[in-house]
Length: 113
Image (cartoon, rainbow, N blue to C red):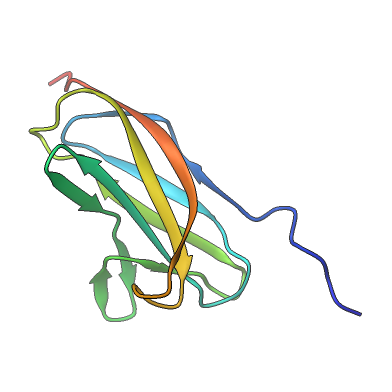
């Protein structure tokens, strides 16, 4: 028998508020093991990409494990103007075939340091 869509597939952020110069965690589950997940946010002219630690070191995507779980850290540059921004999350096999999975809203606030 075939299983239908997984109702628990989703993407979340640890907090939707982050200080300038800090990082935000993006995590969730995918539809299949080994799917790759990318996260990108545009801050003015700059595009920041999420990073994870792979078998060979830092990489600009996460790869879901056998448990379908993934996590990425997205750094917020120190020169970002505080405000609301979109984080686009993509899923796929590679950069050419990936598809937009969801868009998360984050609120960047001034550093308290």
